[in-house]
Length: 97
Image (cartoon, rainbow, N blue to C red; front, side, top):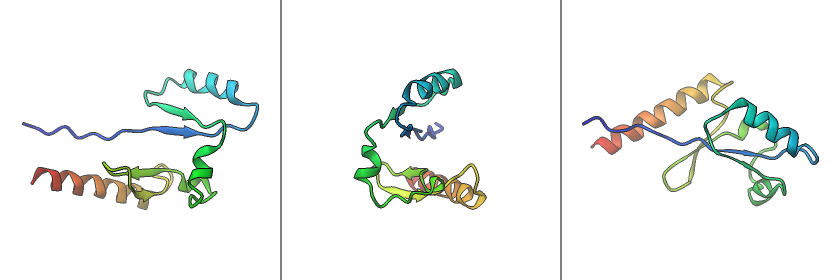
């Protein structure tokens, strides 16, 4: 039996003050299939002050216990994308044993 390989994508957005409705319209028109959270009170960043301000560091890969195991931008950084793939492959091999 082939084992299901899956991971989940969640988005957390912090729109600029006063832009929430515009953001809602844009996001729903994009028809993305992933859940998202609007952090209107900017709580995520205040609860996680260790997160760098640069947006390229705002993409995370979490393990099954919600521990961060990779930070980086897989869309614009081929090295991070390769590391992402290696981590998923390694975890898949480990679970298969």
